[in-house]
Image (cartoon, rainbow, N blue to C red; front, side, top):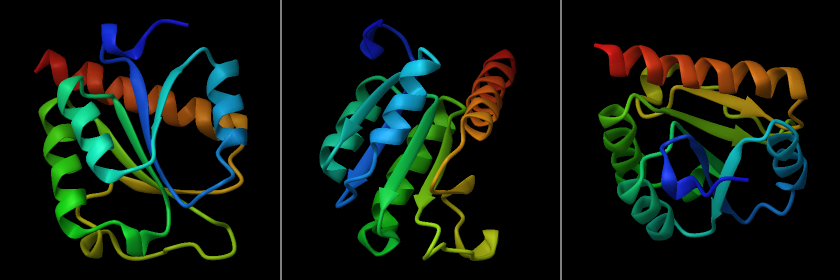
Length: 134
């Protein structure tokens, strides 16, 4: 697998107090998609600032994501036409209006299925490709 630091074609996952990323890691591995998992907001922002990913996934409790953190990720994602998604549990989804979540491009609900992830990756790459042409 290529190092994600050689290109912008990687997915950054901020995992806070979530112990069930194994299915996500397995899906990304099967899709030959580079994934970097960080366990602290500072580490995630530092990595994303150095080499912006095309997709940022915030996993864990939404209450752990400060408005400032989401703003920092939004700034990074906007600069490289990236996508920001929140990964929530199926038993406690965060269904809020988009106006109430201006930093996120959308929400994913666990458990994720391969078809959904493939579509998501294709959409995020298309968004990045389209944005870089303009």
